[in-house]
Every structure is written in C-alpha cells, then in structure tokens.
Image (cartoon, rainbow, N blue to C red; front, side, top):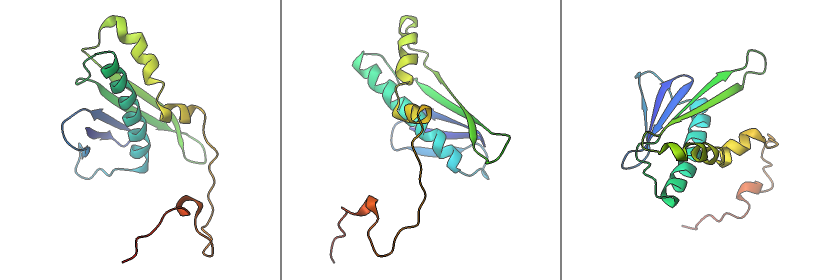
Length: 140
C-alpha cells in the first residue's frame, strides 16, 4: 500500500506490493494527526472493499481511495467535513452501487457517524492503566 500526502488536507491510498509507505509530494510536508485520521478511514474502507472484491471475485488492484477534509471555521479547531472518494476502473457498472454500500460499512466510517465518548485523564501513578492492566512485561 502507498499513502500519498496530496496536501495538508488530502491523501490518496493506492495498492502496491510490499509494506505500507507514506510519501509526500513536497519534501517539507509532514504526516500530521489529520493525515492519520484520514489514513485510518481510507485504509479501513479499502480493506472492506478489497475483502468484498475477493469474496465476489472482482479485481481490485486498481482501487484507489482519496480522502479530503475541511476544518471548522469556529472554535474549537476540528475537522468539520470528511469527503472520501474512490476510483475503481475495473469494477463493472452493475456492481457500482453495491460497492458504494460496502464502502460505508467500514468500522471507522461508522465510528465517525456515531462518535464514541472520549475521555482524557492523567494516569494514576499508583495503579496500572486500564489499557495495560493485563499486559505482562517479560523479565530479563
């Protein structure tokens, strides 16, 4: 997979051989938390669509996903809109509506439509963090 930073508010995800790479069109461009948010949506959507393609015996090597976003004009600063588009030239016309429905089944897509409750708390130094309570650190 190749993730290309198209701008400060857009990415493109394309299937390629090998591990995930992140590339920028400009050398000074940084991979921001907003790119990460869009990347999670693009990767999740690609995974769901690719899985459907395999199941229905469709080629998906030419499936490309782009995600663009816009910030709110008021405070607090946040992403106000996300627009995902995909290009899939080899997909037969009769499968296009089904592919659109499949794309919306991505868990990240659903999470953005039904946002979770987010809490931010300091970790208590005297008790283990709930997220790592069951984790074991190997002894040397």
